Image (cartoon, rainbow, N blue to C red; front, top):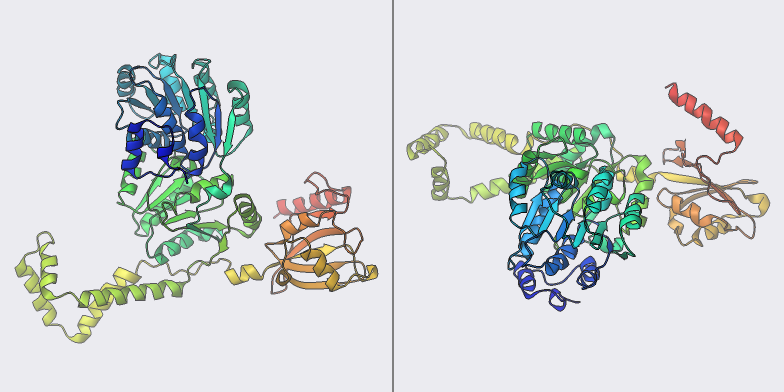
Length: 584
C-alpha cells in the first residue's frame, strides 16, 4: 500500500502529516493527489462522499502549489456551509503548520471587519461560503485576479441550497486560466452544467460506493410509526451501553422539536439547524465535541462538515429523501477502526428504498426491534446490581475522601449523616435505598407501550406474485421453483407457497426478494412459454392481504410500465381509487 511519503509533497507537509499520524492515503487521496500535484493545470471532478478523506485529497496538493513569497490570494475553496468551511480551514492549518501560509476563513453571520483585515494582510488561501465570498467581491474587498486554483467542495449540496447564481458570479471573477477542482457526492444536472460551462476536459475520479461504506458500522432499520419515533429513539438511547451520536431529522422544525422533547426527558441534548445564529451553532458543535452533551439532533445541511471523533450511533429519524444522503449520515460513525451503529426508522412502504440502498451502496441493513419494556428493565437491574457491587467494595476511608470533595460538606455534617442512618431500621434503610436506586436507574425509563413492527412479524410478511401460466399449460411446482431460482436471486427457502390453478400460478415469496426478482424475470420464458408476472399483494401470516401499490407487470417482449403507461381500464380504476382516498 502506498504511503504519503511516496507522494511528491514538500518535506514540510510530509513532516506535518507524520506528526498527525497520517501514513496511508485513502482511495480518493491515492487517485486524486498525484493528478492534482501535476505542474500542468488540470480541471478535475472527484466523486466522493463524506468519510472518504476527500478534504485532504485537495488540501495537500493545493498547499503544495502555493507560492509562499507571493502575498496574494492564489487558491479559493468554496464550501456549502460554515461548518464545512471551518473544517477545511482547520485541515489547512494543521498540514501547513511548517509553512508560512496565511489562510482567510470567510463566512456569513459574523463581522466582515476581521475578514477584510486578514484579506488585506496577504492571505494566500481563501476558504469560505458562496454568499459571503460574493459580498466581498461586490465590496471589492477580495481580489481574485491571481487565483490559480478554485475548489468547489460538495458542489451538489451548494446547488441544492440555491447557490448556483453565486457560484457562477464567483467563477466569472476568477482568471480564465485558473484550474477548477470540483468535488461532489452525486452528479446532478447542475454539476454537468458547471463542467460544460467552466471546465476544460475535466479528469473524473470516482470512489466506488463499496469503498465509501465503512465496514465497522452495523446498519439496521426499524419499522416504527412516525408518532412513536420519539419513544423509539428514547429506548435505543436507554438500551445502549454508551450513546454518543447524532439524530438526523428532515426539517429544522422537527430537529428542534425532537431536541426539546429529549431535553424534557432528562437528556443533555444539542440541536443544530438553519434557524440558529453562527455563534449558537459554533457553541453547540464545541460542546458536542467536548461531550458536554452526547446527543446532537441535526438537519443534513446544518451537519455538513462536522467532523466528530468516536461517535457510537447515528439515528435516522426517517429515510433521507436523497438516498446519497444516507451514506453521508452513517459515515459519521464507525470511523478510525472503531465500531459504530446506524439505525434508520422507516414505514413498511420504505422497504423498497432500503433494498435500493443495499443494492446501490453494497451494504446490508438488518431489521431490529425497538427495545422492549422488559429489556429496558432488565438492563436497569443489571446496572443496579453493578452499582451496588461497586459501592459495597468502597471502604469508609475512600467514601469519606469522596464526600470531602463535595463543596460545603464538612466532616461534622458527614458524621451527622452516618448517625442518622445508624438510627434507622433495616427495613427503613432498604426502603430508602430502593427509592434512591429507582430514581437513579428506573424513573427515567420510557416504559410506555408503543406500536411498531416486530422483526418476526416483518419477516413473516410475504409478497405474492402471479404468473399467467397454470396447469392447463402443463406447469407444475418444480417448474416454477426452477423458473424462479434460475434467476440467481431467490433461494428455495424464500419460496413459501405455490398455488397452481388452470391458467394462473400464485407464488408467495419473502418480501425482500420480489422487486429484484420481477426485473430478472422480464423476457424470461417458463418451460418455453411466454410468461407475464404480476406482483399482486402483500400477505401476512395471519392471512390478511393488501394490494401492492407497484402495479408491476412484466411480460415477454414488454417493458416495465411507468405510472403514465396504464390501459384505459386501469386509468378508470385508478381514478376511482383516488376518489375514494379523497373522500376519507
